[in-house]
Image (tube, rainbow, N blue to C red):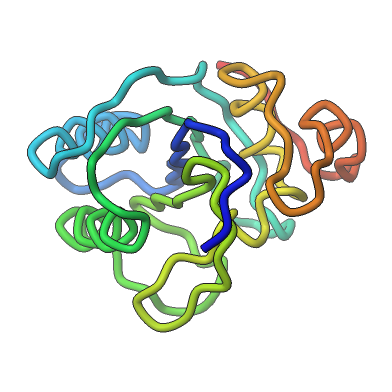
Length: 171
C-alpha cells in the first residue's frame, strides 16, 4: 500500500430503509456508529447529516448519509472487516448492487493509503467516492482541504464536477 501522508481515516455511512429495531435509518446508523467503540474504532467527528436521492436514480426511498472521522489501531483491511461485521450485525444482506438497505458502511480513506484491494482487502481510496455527492459533501464539512489520494484532485473540484442529478440536502 502506498500512502499520501494524510493522517485521517474517513468512513461513510448511509441507509434508506427503517430497521425493525430502530425508528429511522438515522437511528440505525447512530446505533451502528456507536457500536464501533467496542471494536477498537473511535469516532472523532461526524459531519452534518444529509438526505440524498438514490444513486443511480431509482424509485427507492431517499438515503440518510453521514461521514465519520475515526481513529483506530487496526490496519485498513481489518477495519473494513469490522465495518462489514457491523453491517451484518445490523441485518445487512448483500443482494444486487445499489439495493435499498438498512445500513451501508464504507471505508472511504485510510490515511491517504492507496491499495488495489481484492477478496477481504480494502480498495483505497473507496473506488466510487469521487463521483458521489453523498460522500463528498459530508466529507467537505469535515475536511475541506482533503485531496483525492490517487489523483491529487482537491475536494472542492470534485464537488464542483458532480452531476446535477445527484440531489442532496443537509438535514
